[in-house]
Length: 319
Image (cartoon, rainbow, N blue to C red):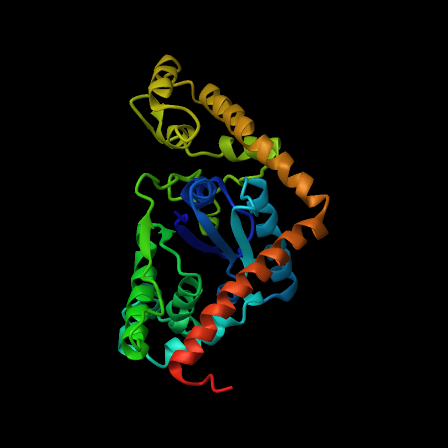
């Protein structure tokens, strides 16, 4: 019995933090144990916000090193770069011709941009269509997403159904993927008590050096309730069981400095092996890039085969 397939993409948007790890990255590593996986670097999607060629190149390499360091196994997961597979943008155009503007105007990203009175580029409006192409080319069974991204999978399903109905010819071209909502993943709080986010400047980098960890933890806002620094506790429970923490925090009630020092040591214990593994991959950038190249070549074969089927269905394949 063949393994089920999962697919996900990650934008090259700079250094990851522990919120990124516990919110998504960790799940990919877990899923690869029982599933066949496709994980791609969504560099074309990143063009919405990143328009610096040098920074884009460095960020792509950085994402590659990050995911290899956390344990993504190229033997189990096809890890590739979106821009290497021209079928993504080709299929997106075909989907454009069967997707209406009123339908896309319901997309959350478009409505958010509209509400903020932003000058909306076509790429932002069309974002869900390219994402549908990203997903459907590889016939995944599941797409792991946060609850706020569920709509993207729903749009992909709707577009797949419309294509299947329009060009079905008695067969289903695209499999309808299911969103895998990561229900057990709590929002990881940042050093200021808000959701950990680069835009809030409240993160703890996933590969931070010891002194950086120390600086981040010591900057955590000690919002206390019942003698417990809630923001410190919220981060600490990522690394220890709540039963263990409740006892420790009760014994050290009001001793915020000691509790922060304990969190620093627990973070260092968790981060150090990942940090060192990333440094090892950094010593051989050409080797790491070869992994990405091989993944792209493998993904290209799958995407090309699906696109040949699509071209035949729409009637443009005549030779």
